[in-house]
Structures are given as C-alpha cells and as structure tokens.
Length: 236
Image (tube, rainbow, N blue to C red; front, side, top):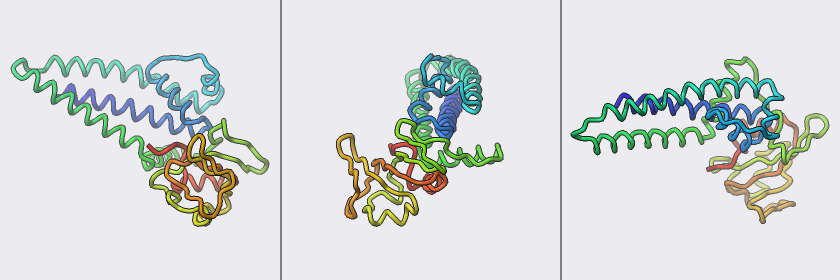
C-alpha cells in the first residue's frame, strides 16, 4: 500500500506542476491549448520543433517554467515507475486479486479527485495568488488568445473570453449583464460554431459555455477575469 500511496503522490505532483505551468504560460500570453500541450511535452520529455516551441524559447519566463518542468518530469517519471513496481511486488499472493483491485481503485479515485480540483477556477486563482506572493509582482495578462486578439492604442484590446457555469454573467440577459461588465463593451456572443450574435440585443441571454467578444482596456478586462465573470478557458 505504501507503494500505491507514493505513486499517487508522485502523480499528484506531476499533474499539479503541469497544470500550474499551463496557467502561468497562459498568463504570459499563450493560448491555453498551446500552453497545455507544451507543458505536457516538457514533463514527458517529448520535444516538438514547431512554431509554438519558438514562442516558449523566445520568452524568458516561459523558458524558466518549461526548463523547471523538464527537470521535475524526469525525476517524477523515474519515481513513478519505482513506486509502481514496489506496489506490485508487495502484493500478497493469498489476496492478490483483491489487493490489486483495491490499490488500482485507490489510485484511480485519487487521480479523479486531482483532475476535478485542477479544473476548478478557484484553483487557477489560487495558483496565480501564490505565484504573485513568491515573485512579489502582480501577474497581468500579456495577451489573450493570440488568434483572436487585436492590440489597440493605450492598452485597449479586443478579446474572446469564456463564461463558466459559476460566472455571474451565466443566464443573464444582455441588458442585465452590462452593469457587471462596467466599461468593457460586449461586441458579440458566440454560442457555437454556427451561432454567433454579432449585435447583441437586450433580450439575448448569455449562457454558460458561451464565449464573449469584449472590448476594453487591459486592466478592466483583467478585473473581469479576477472576479470570475469571464475565464480564459471554457467550463468543463
């Protein structure tokens, strides 16, 4: 059982570090899909010479994050294999089937709990707060989803962000959502690939999972994200 627990702890650490690295990379201006792929690539030691990789090497913070993740990944994979072998060797022959089922059940339940926690928005906010505490600086988004972002003078931006299930905007009509958005302008509501409200009307409803096309200053959009009204990623 000690082997299973140690394996679970190692996998917890690997997945948590990967998730933390993804969040930090997103806050440096990389889209979530690219950040997640590069983090997993680094922790598993698989390198891909793509244009996305150049985005990592050209930024000092990203290089440090990925470099540390490579070291953690190498140590973690070795420790995982050792723990897994240890957990299998110590299984009693008399109760082999039951012990094996129990250990894999505990391992699966633990990983499921980890996955659930790492997907919560409060976890993302906690990671950013901890990072800010240890670095002594405030993390601000350098860019939002570069494929949909346009830089404008005086720090004004057009950005596509998402409405999660626990967002105050979820379920509200356009006219009721305006006070929550403040000075940020809502230009459009994307409900699906084919359903896009380019000129939102007063009765249009903002649903969980919708993406919003927003226009405003970077600090004001940052405030919306920090308050949980919009998110950098879709709700699960």
